[in-house]
Length: 508
Image (cartoon, rainbow, N blue to C red; front, side, top):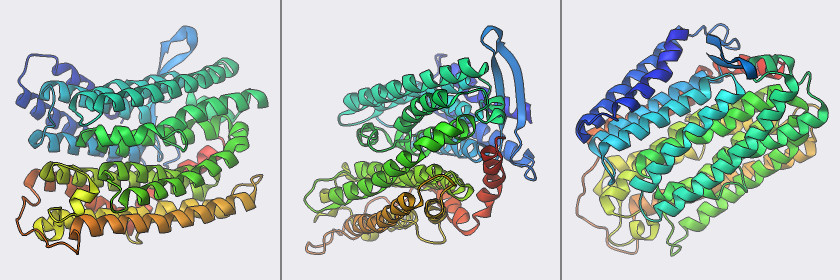
C-alpha cells in the first residue's frame, strides 16, 4: 500500500510535467481528466486496502532519510484522519477536471489550466500524506502558486486584486507557521510528526509550547479561515473560476484545520490547551459573523453576490470545525473532522451549481437573479433549482444529510469540553453556535426563495434556459449522493476518525 500512496502523489505531478510539452488545449484537458481519474482510482484503492480494523495506526508508510543533516525524512503515511481527506481531494479534483473539459473558463488556455490544476492536486494530496513538519510546510506552500494563477488568469471581476490578497495573507500566515515548526524541530531534535506526537510534548518546555502553538495556530487559522483572519476569502471566491472555488472551499480550507488536528493537538498539547478557549471564542464569533454577513448580502437591494455569500457561509461553517477542535474532546474532534468532509461535499456542490447559474445568466448578483427577468430556476431550469435547494438544506444542517452530524458533535463537544477548560465559557460558545444554525437556515432559505422562485411581485419569466447538462450531472451527482450517504450513514466516517482521534489525544 505504500507504493499506492507514493503513486497517488506522483501521478498528478507527472501529469503536470506532461502539460509542459507542446500539446493542444483539448488534448491537455483530456489528459487532465485521465490523470485525475487515475488518481481517484488510486485513492479508492488506498481506501479499499486500508486496515479498517485499526484506523488509529499509520498505514501505507514510507520513511526514508531525505536531508540527514537536519533529520528531515521523506515520511508518508495515512490513518483514519487523513484517509477521508485524501479521497475527498482526489474526487473533487477529478470532478473539476471533468467539468472543465466541457466548460473551460475564459483565460490563457487549457494546457496551462490543466498543468496548474494537477500541480494544485499534488500539493493538496501531499499535505494530507506527509508526516514531517518540513515536508508539511513545503506541501502547504505548493498549492499557493497554482491557486494564485487560477484566480488571476481564469477568474473574473477584480481577479488580480483578489489573487494578490490571497497570496499575501496565506504567505504571511505560512511564514509565521514555519517559525513555529522550526522552534519545535530545534527544541525536540526532530521534525518527524509521528515521533513528536508520541512524545506528546515531551522535550518541549511550557514556554516553547506556548510560543510554538501560537505561531502554528495563527498560520493555520489564516488558511482555515478563522475570524478575523478570513477577509481574503470572500474576494478570492468571488473572483475565482468555478473549479478554483470548488477546490478552495472543498479542500484548501481543510488544510488549515487538518494541521490543527495533526500538529497542534498531539505535538504541543500544553500550548494548545492554553489557547483552546480563545480559539473557541473566535470560532463562535465567526459562526455568528458569517451568518450575519450572509443575511446582509441576501437582503433585497443589497446587490449581494451569490458566490460571495457562499464564501461567507464557509467562514461560519468552518467555525463549527474550529469549535470542535477547541473543545479538545473526542466528540468535538470527530465532529470537526466530519464537518470538514461534509463541508467539502456540500460547498463543492454549491459552487458548481452557482457557477452554472452565473454562466447561464451572466451574473451572480442576487437582486438580478431575483428580479423580473431573474433566475426563477424552478420554472426555467428545475433540475438545477432542485440541486441548489438540496445543497442549501444540506448546508443548513438538515438531519439526514451530511451537514447535520459535524455541527451536532462540535456543539456537543462544547457542551462538555475537556478537563481544565472553562465549561461556562464553552456553553456560551455552544449557545452562539446554536444561534448561528438558526441564522444559517434563515439566509439559505431566503436565497433559495429568491433564486428558485424569483420576485413574487413581478411576472415570472417564461423563457426556458438550458437545464442540467450531461457534464454537469456527471460532476455534481457524486457530491449529492455522498452528501446523502454521509448523512444517513455517519459511521462510515466516524468509524475511521474516532480511533485515530483517541490515539492522537492519548499521545499516539
